Image 1 (tube, rainbow, N blue to C red):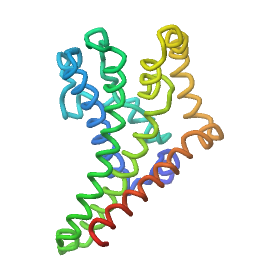
Image 2: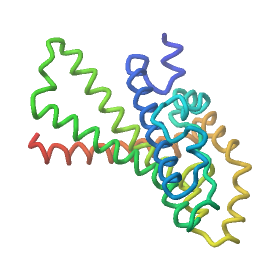
Image 3: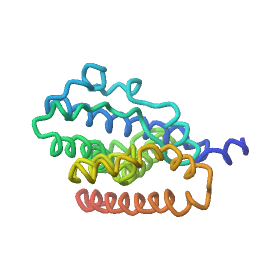
Image 4: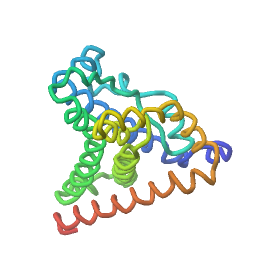
Length: 227
């Protein structure tokens, strides 16, 4: 048990809540990419079954393993053929941004629903108080991890959404130069996984920022429901 606790990014007792929050966050994120790409005229993702809220079509095993060990990872990227868009650059930016924004919305909706259930007496009405504790733990990870996914995916490094947004926003010549970074992407992420000092000054601050964002959501929800 001690070995696993030392190996994993989170404690074993909260691991199910952490994994469930990630699976939901990743699924909604990738579904949003696929949904908007299809709406804008690119059927690529739809033909591959990616316009779906079924986690099985979106989850990447290596990405999940890295999240369990290092605290960051990824899902299967949604294939997008930008040439099918009427305005490839603008619609490409919207499609790329849809994923992170969906995580932000999911975090906000989660905390509002939780406080609404608490306000109307649903939370706290269970005979077993451990149910309330489990719900609260799940909500904590849903809000924190979706805030983290929002922030993390906006980093302008391949293959993250922030990189795709920047690539579509830049003029074609500068975008072509930027694409040279793609060959180094996996090496960079592996360095972040295995070099603890590097991870401490890159990934850890993102969790701090996600925690601050989560706190503002809690404050907002308490203001609405008078908590």
